[in-house]
Image (cartoon, rainbow, N blue to C red; front, side, top):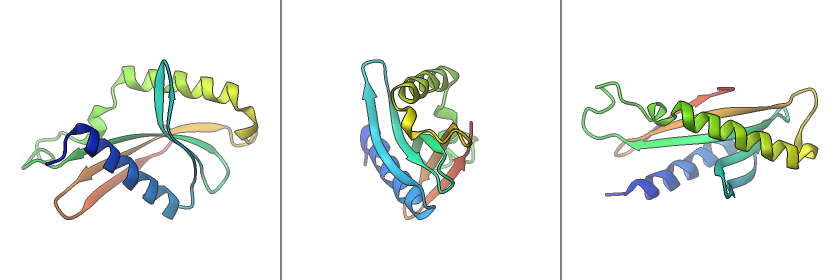
Length: 125
């Protein structure tokens, strides 16, 4: 059985595989600063800079049926912290911004089942 960190790493690996298939270009993984972390930084096929927050959970019995989803792990506080991190990243790397497209934050929520994975990609959260 995987622990929380292993599930998180598996989720990020699967999210990167998904993004590459969707023609995103991965720039950074686990971009860290003393005040926070961004899971994945990428550019979309239309050249928009996209910050990806990944939330993954193992399906335990009927947990999904009871209404609890990986999306529920993205709290308002976590989203605000992510927004601040992204703003600081953009200030340090203006060369990565297409002025017409700007940047956005997406959420990739993964439910890891025994033999499959359910991926939900929420754009511009």
